[in-house]
Length: 484
Image 1 (cartoon, helix red, strand yellow):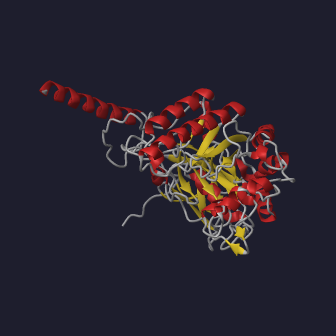
Image 2 (tube, rainbow, N blue to C red):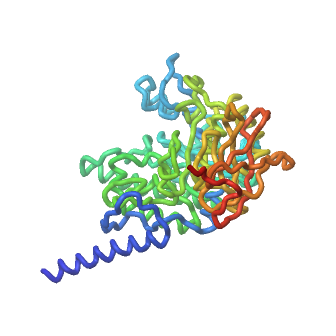
Image 3 (cartoon, rainbow, N blue to C red):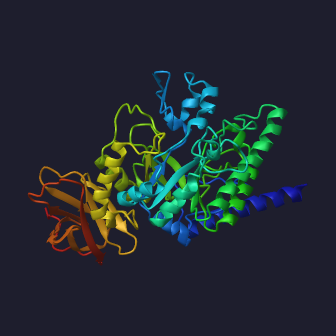
């Protein structure tokens, strides 16, 4: 018995030391002490993926989300009453009869659906990837599924929505990711909690259904670059660590390089996103929904993206946009902030029952696109640099050229922009991205600290100033501390 105990201690110690060694080798942030639980279904990799597919994902900068389904028909309204929640959740509202909702598919006929126009609009906005809801929580499928009748083929429209969309976005050079809700209010075997043996038996059929549909999607649309999961917070799903882990392996075999975020699978103890040792599960963190990290430390050095609505909380089409509706400059600032913290920013759109994007969304997409057309080099292939953030805006650094972009949102009343670099940096050239003849001369005011003068320039929109630099031995260009 003692020999077995000693053996167990040695195994756990080896696992713990191995994890520390692996973390150290890959420069993994270690803000909190790691535990050493042996997990069969925790993180299978420490640190970021470095393969070409993930490098491509990391450099997107801007993406588009589309939430669409039969919930666009009521558009957040029923019998003259307005549902205050997100439109795609209207079936869960006491004012929406379940039977009436479940028959809405018989009216689904988006006569104005034009995937090529949607793709062109995304291209003009500057999106490098898009995410489309293949199936939301209601279970209605926008593709012809062999495993349910509750799909688009049994609507008046009668045709595949997803296939033509994938083709149109592929043609514009925009990578497609498929949203899939594991939660499914339509399937008879779905349960949120497994309270009885009957529940467990029914849920086994639901698991097989879920597996079949996911593999079906990857077979039908083999250019898919990744899967974006939702509806995985139920206690029933949290018990499916082995099943979900095996399914993730199957899906990755279908499409080599497939990208799966942190929402999909639980670990052995039901934790999502991060396992019981604090390690990220999946290829990037999906915890930033309608919010942004404040600092780089908040990201723990992980890949991540932020998905954002235009009104405060509407994903699918809601005819009544209440509360604050974000402006294009607010959204551009969120985009730049995301990139400055090594993340991507994904903006959501909700087509109506006919397949049209509302005019407010089109206008915002156009305005963002106009800014992106001039300033995209501050977004694409860019990420974080460890220079101290200043109140005028954000830094991004081009991962290819090494150039630093100052994206200025706030002009100080004294027209002075402060630059505080990391140590041993020598500023070589500072110029306006959109007018290379406009050169800014840095004044050194302290070690590793400079100012540049904007003068009488007015900011009509967020402005990008480019900094070229190299590494010096730390000497100053004339600044010397005052002697007393």
